Image (cartoon, rainbow, N blue to C red):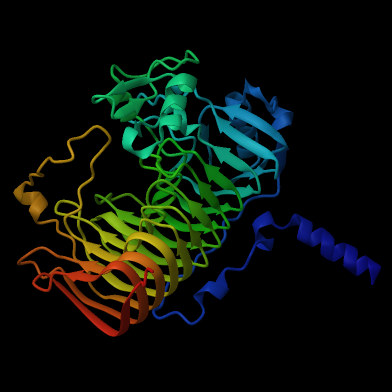
Length: 473
């Protein structure tokens, strides 16, 4: 009996590590539509510690070469796990490769260096992301540690979004410059002495990159880690297939410019579960841009978003603003939004729109929503820091043909207490582009307005929907 037990253990030890990982099939039970199921990436069992390849976690030593060496040594063996132990691991950009797992100890912090010159990408207008992969398969970031983007050295700050104390802190601690008549601060000519990487503060701001980004990849797992303080978006798989985001915490200042938490941009077959978001921009967001013929995925399809909590964000669940290649077979259920600017937010505009199909949103609870609990918006404009807020957009004839079509969307069992407006919806006159949307079994307690629906451009069917004014004594 003992010999059999030892044999079984030996066999298990020879199996790829991820065969023992969580089974995600339970998230595909009782779905309102058929959704293609994710599979966990397979990572070989080879392991290397960052300290074995020269890494020093003292918060001072630069570990860019150690990360590179560890990943290259594992790649020579066919892949495996690079362990990041307790410590603060200062680094430049980390490029992941096929069959690589980056595993963070509970008290490990990967800290991106404030030296912007380390991230310059000569082949792109933007810098390298902090941790990234491109055209790769079977990639994982796991563990209980933290990935910190040192975003304060990158992001502009709007004066209206900070207190006097915070404003002085940026100037006195980091340095930087004020522009736009003192309404905007840039981390330019910082006191620490790190070089600028562009000719002007505004041009340097345009080089900000994501913290964790996967592009044209397949079989991705991000599990358990905290991702915080990004220069731009935090976790951003794009044009990728088979993506699992599980038990991830994303956090940054509430006013972080473009501080999106988890964005799926053109992802096919994906899941976001058990995660916690407290961010400066969109919370759980689906996007789709221009068509790429060689990408594993175009548009967003076969996605489940379940059992997540969103605290501050511009929206709890967000669609857009880019929806160009379409959104279909997306199920959002059993999520909690508490303190978001909007709850369920569908936003797009001319030049960046696409069509939605088979979208189901169920069992959502919300509290303390600053603006709308549910909103459909077809005139959205992206306004970067420093741009004219009163500028009137112009569109080419080609852009006018790329309009958003929000349709085949089914919302059931939403409970919201404390939104300024219950439901707001408006389309584009003459396009009939907000239609076939049903909202049922929903209760929203609003502070100011029950609904603002442009019935000429938006067609919503509401069944058993209660919009109740909040009684303020």
